Every structure is written in structure tokens, then in C-alpha cells.
Image 1 (cartoon, rainbow, N blue to C red):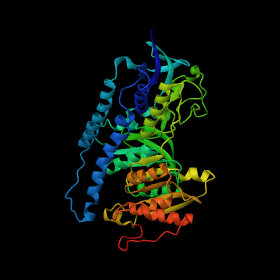
Image 2: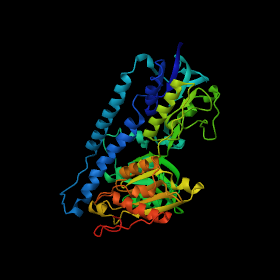
Image 3: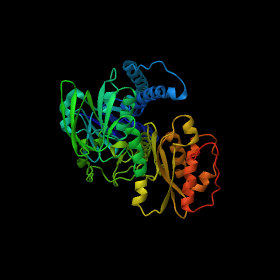
Image 4: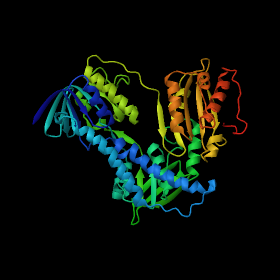
Amino acid sequence: MNVREVDVAIIGAGTSGMTAYRAVREHTDSVVVIESGVYGTTCARVGCMPSKLLIAAAEVSHQIDLAPEFGVDVASKHIDGGRVMQRVKSERDRFVGFVEEAVENWPAEHKLKGKATFTGPNELQVDDHTLVRAQRIVIAAGSRPAVPPPWYELGDRLLINDDVFEWDTLPARVAVIGTGVIGMEISQALSRLGVSTTLFGVGNQFGPVSDPAINAEVGALLDAEMAVEPDAFVEKVERTEQGVMIHYKSNGKRQSLEVDYLLAATGRRSNLDQLNLAAAGIQLDEFGVPDFDDATGQIEDSTIFIAGDVSNAHPLLHEAADDGRIAGDNAGRYPDVRVRPRRAALSVVFTDPQIALVGASFKELTESETEFAVGEVSFVDQGRSRVMLRNKGLLRVYGEKRTGRFLGAEMIGPAAEHIGHLLSWSVQHGLTVQQMLDSPFYHPVIEEGLRTALRKLNRELHMGPVPVERCLDCGPGA
């Protein structure tokens, strides 16, 4: 049995683990990163980047479908599934290669392969070959897909999103179960690439959206272009000669659907349960998560820190990187633990139209004692959006009464990834709605729709008077 003694041990070499490693090395070179799987972050290998590659192909296909509305005739459209997946995998491998190259440049003594479990507050057993004694430990062990155990009987007809990016070509029929971010993005992309796709959800809830008006808009827009069962109870799945038979109940009726594959997009589960945290003296709540400080990454008052989606607090890449930087810095400088304020919340879903959530959500505001008002705009008649045939969706913005401070927004609509950034910066810097309206808005741009929503919000806040200016030839959303 080998014994390693280090200042800091990091469990996991994903986004948060790699960022933690860089932060730790600013304080000490006595560090080891323990990784049980392949190097290459979830984002690069099976998450953000390969999914966006599939979505990019789907968007091209969709634009061809829209071409006749612009007066552009397209003789034929043939989707070559093999070539679609070839590009997805090729570019995916390129992104993964950058991550692997970064890890390869680490000193050999800083890397340790194997599965780590706690044997004490400052001890980790790595497989059966190494005992690591670390003065401080950063847990960045990530998460894994959560799949109902009976579904595993489907064998290779059961997929998780990881499997999609290993396809050599596109299948004919797929059922996607789960209307979270992954389920919405992949199901729409597959549908636009010619795959007969049915999306199953529960409770008419779509992704992280909490504003009922936006949630209804999301459901309507997805249902307009593919089969959606937004509130279905899957009673049984069984393997057939052709693929998978799904028996479910929807609108009070029992129905069945046969597909080639069942894609489980039913959420992810933290890997904390695999680490034997009890041996470290760490207490877990009813959800299996320890008490930790979000601004320092420190678990209770221990020498153990946590980062990334293993905590399920910030399951987004940029947040995971921030987590790693905070936890790694504090583990490296311990006992001088310092608070680092979090950035304004920003979440984007790459459906089409895109979805964005910024700052405080509608749910958070309604459950708090904050007095707030709402302004909204539909993109149906928004000038630039109509020009581009992207005039779908709804934006709702929230402001605090009496102060006029901008609090947040939820939207589905064109350019949501860009509007979301503008709004998150406004939250970050504590701008008022009036200050946002005093900022430049070019013409004609989609952001003019945002201005319309902000004007309505300011009127609801009674913070005016706001001069009513309107482009006479652009429609009410201009």
C-alpha cells in the first residue's frame, strides 16, 4: 500500500476540480488530483459542447425549412445522419483534446487515478493501491445520470445523453423522458434532424422556468413542432423486437408508444453518496448534501471544501468554475478562509427559441417578502424578430417597488443568450430600471423588445414619468 502525504487533495478532475487545482497551486505545490474516470470535463465530453454541435446541425436544417418563406426555393433537403454525427464527434474530440492536453501538462506526481473514499477526516483510500493523507480536501466529484433502475432492463435500447454523442448515425424513432434542460435541447434537435421524437414530462413543467406565463409559452412552442406529453406518468417500459414499448398515462388515458430508443433525461444525482463522508464526520441533510458556505466552499467548519455539481447548488459550467476557484483558493490558503461574493445568476437553455433566467426568479420573488412588479413583451410583433422570422416567445422582467431596482427576468425568445447576459450584468451592478432605459438601444435590433418590457415595468413600478417613444414602422414590440 502506497501512502501519499499532501497539503491538498482534490477529488475529481472536471471543470471545478481543474479550476480548484489551478487555485491551489497559487499557494502550494503539494497537491494531488484524484480521478476515477477519463479526463475531459462533462461539458466537453458529453455536455455543453457536443449538445451544441447537434443543435447547430438542427438549426441549419430548420433554416432550410424556413427558406421558402423568404422566397428562397430549396430543391431538396437530405439529412445525412452519419455526416451529422461525424462532425459532432470530431469536434467533440477536439474540445476534449484541449482538456486532456491541459492535464497532460500537469506534473505526474499531481495526478492519481482511482476511486477515492474517505477513511477519516483527512484520509482518502484510492482503490486498493494508495492511502492519501491530506491536510485539506476539495470534493469536486461531479454527478451522474439518475435513471429508474427497472429501465436498465432495456439494455442497449436505454440511452443517457452521453450515449447520444457516440451514435454513428441518427435513429428513426426516439422517446425522450424528462423536460429538463437536456431533454428539451436534445429532443428538439433530434426532431429537427428528422428523428420522430416524443418528449415526456411531468406536471407541465419545463426546465428551470418558474414564471407560469413563460412556462406555458415554452410548452406551446415545443408542442408546435414535435410530439410533447407534458404531464405523463410512465407506468412501464419493456424491450421489444423493434426497440422499446412505453406504456404511459396522459390526460386520464392509458396509451402506448413504440420507439427505437428511450433516452432518459431524468436528471442527475450527486456522487457524494459514493465517498463515505460519514468516515470524515460530515453530516448530510435529507437530500444527501452537507452544510456548506456557498461563498467559501467550506463544509461546516472543517478542512473539507466542496465545488461543482456534486453539491447540486450550481449545475452550470461557469458556476462550477467559480466554485472550484473559491474552494481551491480557500483550501490552499487555509486557515485564512475568505468570502468571495457570487456572480448574478444566469442560466441559458439552447432550445429555439432560447430560454434564459437571470437574477431572482419569479418563484424566488413570490416566495420572498420582496414587493415587485412585472413588465413583459411578446416577440410576435417585435420588428427585427419579424424580419428574421424569429418572432416567437415572451420576456418578463421584474423590478423592486419603491427603489426601482432591476431584480431579474425569465424569457423564451430570440437572442436570449445575449439578452440574458445584458440583464445579468444589470443585476450584478445593481442598476435601476430607469438606468437601464437610459442606456443605448440601437435600431433595428431584438433588444428593442427588451426596452419595451422595461418601459412597461417602469410604469408598473410608478417610477416615471417615462417618455413614450415608438418606432412607427416596427410594431408594438419595437
